[in-house]
Amino acid sequence: MKLKQTSMYYYDFQVVLQEVPGEISLCFSICGCQLKCKGCHSSHLWKESNGKILLLNNYLEILNKYRNYATCVLFMGGEWHEDELIEMLQMARHKKYKTCLYTGEESISKNLMEQLSFLKTGKWNPELGGLDSPTTNQKFIDIQLKKNLNYLFSKN
Image (tube, rainbow, N blue to C red; front, side, top):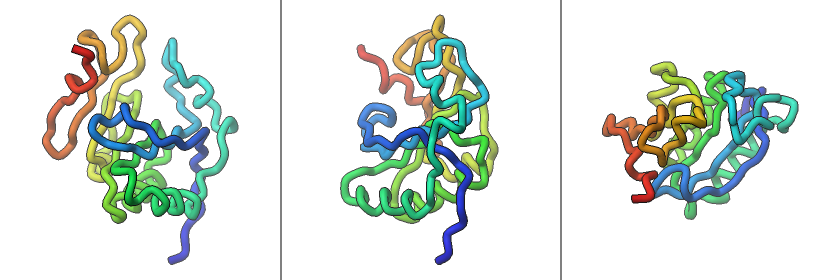
């Protein structure tokens, strides 16, 4: 299979435990966010040039390396590269990973939604807090169940 080149830039890759409750997630932080939320803890992701290109062969190597360890692939942003993101989510799903997108948008396209197991929506608003806050504007949704899972982030 000949892999197409992506134009997505990522700042880093991490294995994370808290962003998707109950899952060990392979997290890719994508550069180029245009929302520029006030108080954003990841303002380094605003400039695409702060990252390096996410090569598809490197992405597949990571998926293969963690196949028996991790259960989910998480993209922090990237919806502005919809076609490429969909292709990467499809690759993850083909390898039996669950998929998640964290976006500051309120909604995403149906085509992108169809590739996700979980979706976090909503701009960061410091006055309202994050997913662990009872006043947050953000939502963490299980796509298949169509259920808000914010309560899983609560410390109580």
